Length: 404
Image 1: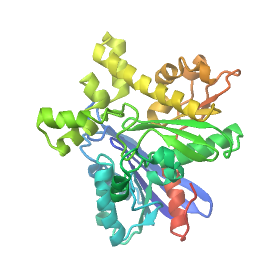
Image 2: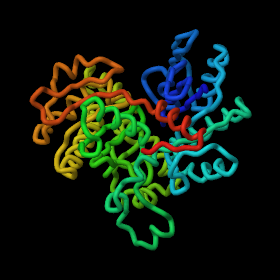
Image 3: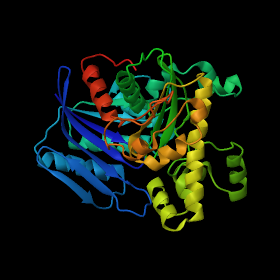
Image 4: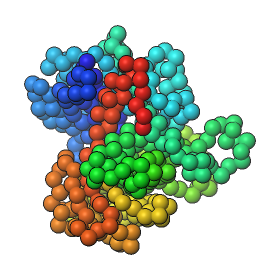
């Protein structure tokens, strides 16, 4: 069975084609679209690795459906047919607690989830529509990031609101990047030869669009930086992260704008882009700092580092210590300068980064970056959300579900 997996981020799109035979997963093709629909000083591009071609296409990538069409065109040009298509959906709300086969009924429920993650869910939904048009009759299924965080305890997921409002609207912390965390947590336990049921792990999923931090203890997620939506937590590319909740009320009054206007401000015009004034890409900020020490770039970068360190420290205290610190996704794996800045000053938690190993890491591989005397094992680990999606699809199409 050949499974095509689409993984839409807020400003990226990953895809892979797997040939699945029993427990064997052969990767046939893969690629990623970078800087989709965002403001950056560098060009957007699609990289593709297939059985017949490897290429990099620099072109305008205004939205995710354009990218999906390009991917399907490329696979068709290489005569790479598929038997099923799997999709990542960031927010399943209270409608979905596990993966599902796409049916007309489930499609309507997905529509109801679109406002819950406004810069993620609509992207995935439009790619689903592209696949339905281009690949009629091919079964499609959907996996959800929120499913991984179903183990959060009530004191972590409950908001301190009047109970009648929670009962009426179902407000709670859901958590995100669950597919990524499912992969790196299990792989890290294998790599470090730790019991996943007793290890205390903090994982930092640091992407070019969205980022979050997870606390994992006793075989379950115990807290995470994102909440009801993917907006809270870290300072992200265009998202505010944590924000005083009274500010939206003041902005509504002072600007005379609508809730929809605020959503655009908080999700698409804030974060690194809003503070720096010129780019949503942390790598651009680092280049500008090295070039001329541009103060807004320095401020945005220091705010991002500060927020990551704060969450690591808080979660270390919450779990009574730490065994493993994981850095994953594009920025977490490939940005040694950010890792060094984040780990600096966290020695009290047992985190002792090997500065030389950190700078000389091997891209796209697991790297142990802690010193021999460090109480905490620090590792970089490329995530593979697409493998998790394909694995879940393999089970789902057989009438089973993965246990996250």
